[in-house]
Amino acid sequence: MSEELFTNLAIFVLSLLVGFEVMSKIPATLQTPMMSGANAIHGVVVVGAFVIAAEANSWPFYILAFLGAFFSAVNVAGGYTVTDRMLGMFDRKPAAKQGEADRK
Amino acid sequence: MSALQTVSALIYLISAVCYVLGVHMMRSPKTARHGNGLSAIGMFLAVITIIVTIIVEGTIDSVGWIVLILGLALGILYGMVKARKVPMTDVPQLVSLFNAVGGGAAAVIGIFDYLLKGDGATLSLAFSLPVFLDVVIGGITFSGSLIATGKLSGKVPGKPITFPGARLLNIIVVVAILVSAWFMMASPTNVWYVILALVMSLIFGLLMTLPIGGADMPVVVSLLNAFTGLAVAFAGFVINNQVLIIAGALVGAAGTILTLQMADAMNRSVANILAGGFGTGDSDANSTADAVPVDVKETSADDIGLQLAYAHNVMIVPGYGLAAAQAQHEVAELAKVLTDKGINVDYAIHPVAGRMPGHMNVLLADVNVPYEQMKQLDDANPMFENTDVSLVIGANDVTNPLARESGNEISGMPILDVDKSKSVVVIKRSMSTGYAGIQNPLFSMDNTQMFFSDAKKGLQDIVAATKQYLE
Image 1 (cartoon, rainbow over the protein chains, first blue to last red):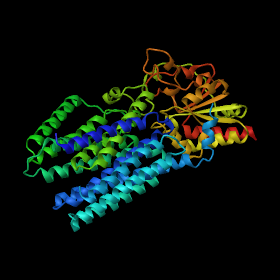
Image 2: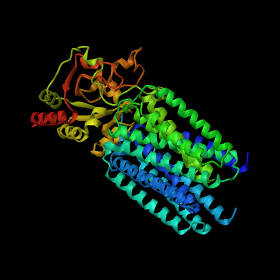
Image 3: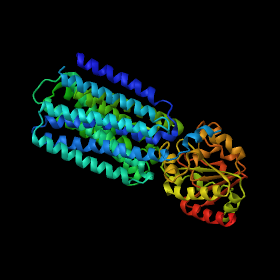
Image 4: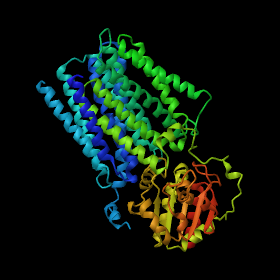
């Protein structure tokens, strides 16, 4: 196994563990925005779209680069916007903090 | 490492930290919006870094710039317009659509690099294995998420779609995927194997999602979200970019946990859901419900108005039917009419009410329901003893007392203890069963009255009647 692959594999496994840790015990209230927010994060694939666009040198590759850029841009821009809209709805209640303390 | 590589690696690291902290902050409603903002900052940093990198490296040609900028501009425009215009009831299908394109982008990157580097060269397993995983997982999420989007929006029938020979076709497709994997690694010069892998995984995505009922779709969307995360992580292996690996793995783990939690709240196992053929997404009209006459008391909007006007504590139990009828405005109006006269109104929200966990909270927040009125299952259940009227709107399985008994489909599922309140009013279109397909004895209990109506229309009538008694 090459050193590069091993490093990447270690990063992958550790990130999975961090993900499990960070995401456990999410309140059900926030699961939809949370899913949408996580969805926006995998839009980081846009970085890959830049990388392939820089390597493209013939038409089939240009078309693939275009598709990659388009798909990932939809994912990033749309994902963050809709998540923000949803969370803004929870945000605009000034009494939200008190409400949590009042429960029960 | 050159200076540029070092600096960009460090900035990628910062952006990865932003994602982790951002997701962490999304656990509380107070910090959630800032969390999402922090995650977006991380994304911005990553994009700036890659722009600087490709400019400095200078390998990109002018056509490359044009396709890149055109693709990004169109994508940003489309994504923003969709995200701004979507009504809150349609959020689940939009999330699924964005998930589809994410998976598609990951697959495209895998195919690109394979075609570019696979041309005549001998490829190491360390390269071709991640490419294979990237393309296949990306392909499955792309077509699977599109079907999920269609099912949630009603463009594809919500009921399970099965056909004879489906199982055999599944086996053939899986075998074809494995064969293409073998050849992709053994003879990387042939482009047809990666194309075969892509086409087969697209078909597999369809076959996987079509037999699953609409009501189970949220779990599938979450699972496919996890898949996309993994596809993105493998795309990171392919282009040797660690920010993709970290962010992809993070989302993969997040999606997995959400999937398990949701399946739990619905009292189903993920394997059971994926087996499909169960659940219709909406009330099943031709179930056994019609054959078994149930002794129920029908009531009128006028009578409900009277009950509500003389109540002290009212609990509203919104369910899938409310979301489907888009009656959240009417329910908020009714609550406002009551609270203005000093009647306590709360909402008891089951974790899987609506079309996605937490979706009901989003719908209610959208119509300005105060956050403190939304009670989650554990907070709501002790309140029912002191509730004068529970108003169940389009909820079925989540209020079914049979869950407390053993030996049926929903045994052990956490439910809202509506039956413990002094009086229960159920607004429902017919006596049909919920997606679990079993009768709800709540409907024939002594203190329960049924009001057969569409949620929206029924609530409008109740608001009018209630106003009349409160004035």
